[in-house]
Image: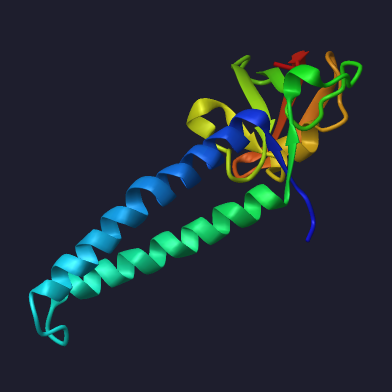
Length: 158
């Protein structure tokens, strides 16, 4: 299985989710199933069906998170020494050339990406255009609204 890059913060979030699934969600759904069974006839018991569906989802998510963690290559951006180049985990400040709009992104793994938080997926068009560039370079990104050019103002490893 190929390794999946993930930041240290992203791995911690996955571990916390796994802990919650195993210690809170799983016991809750087991309890809900036994309460539904106690009501008698299971063939027409909607609560039982809902609880069983929820159990299937929880068990599937546990397996998915465990798989991701076992294949994870955890990268701590603070320990990177990329000589000013943009790499996975870099925090990048950009300025859009046409509008002058300033934006700040951190390049992260698929599971961590959240545009509202400024976390962009390593496989997104903008991240792919930025990888390998340095402060002062210009990155061209083919966006849905057309070609956008971004000047790289700063590269940090936080």
